[in-house]
Length: 454
Figure (cartoon, rainbow, N blue to C red):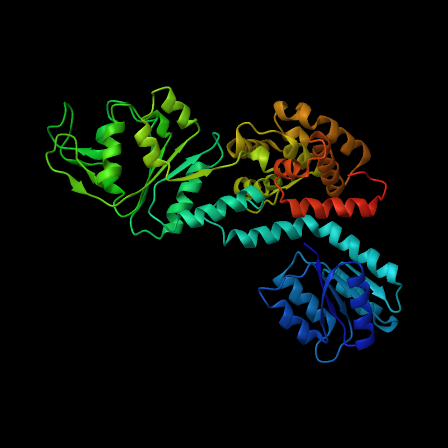
């Protein structure tokens, strides 16, 4: 989790001095002997830099070309310019073109470290967001998440996709169970379609014919021969959402499909062989439904071969800013780049979200529709969120003290740690962080304040 700094300097003595200064402060350091060498390193997709420190005057390729390359490839990465007195005008021009700040040689060690620390602190959020956006191209479907619980879920999705075993997805309403099902289908590389069925939305008397199809004489009102949804999903995936709502009368027929791999249309004599991946989902406790005799035990075990639990949003608060960014982009009108005020972001992050991602999306869509400006404020939020006791104390403190986002994060982490009586494992779970990341942040807080007891 150390931050990585690229030093671009043709003067060997100065390059090695800066390398030593940053390494003594526990940064990872890469060096480039000139601009061309720097661009080679910046072009390596496997190498990410959190900060670039570059000289202005160098042989072959000057610092302004390095800056331009960083702006094009990694616009979120801050660039600090170091320059001799005679090149200050060039350095100022680089700052106008996007460099973070410039320092004139000779500079003091503390001066270099202070500027670097500020640059890293002020760009931490945008660098994290950019990294996550790049990582999203490697994660399944359209699921957004960088927290530890979601990374575990992504791993299970990819592993589940490698087999044709049945999957049961559980989780609260609004957590995105259908997205998970689509991601498993995507990871399976099946030739057939993904067919989604909401078991609660089909009238009980029509469930069987919808799932398995019917002949023209199957029942009064049947119009011709009709293939069921299972046949439509042949060679693909059928997603049975709200499986707990499936009528008891239909459950034995579904069990037969699972056991035999065949379907029989209502009113037909012959069965048809099909190959379908079955994924079911529910927000209910199916084991309890079995005890209550509202769900067949043999069907439960047939469905529950691979079990995936989608975590509620309150257990992955680390993902909330990423989701907000996604929904802002989704609902903003063309050409309008809406932003969110830091205190508004903090109150949304602290809110418990009983309706999970669905409730958060609804909130952002409403705020975008009603806002008067280019920045979403607390006044754009629904009253239930503005008056939430969960976040009022912290937000009041933030607004009174004009806290930065980094300071808000620190206060929130320490608050959760206090609520868990110092249990770092439990705190990390609530925060949606892995323990290593939490320990690193607590380490940083101790360095800032050695008297802090954490």
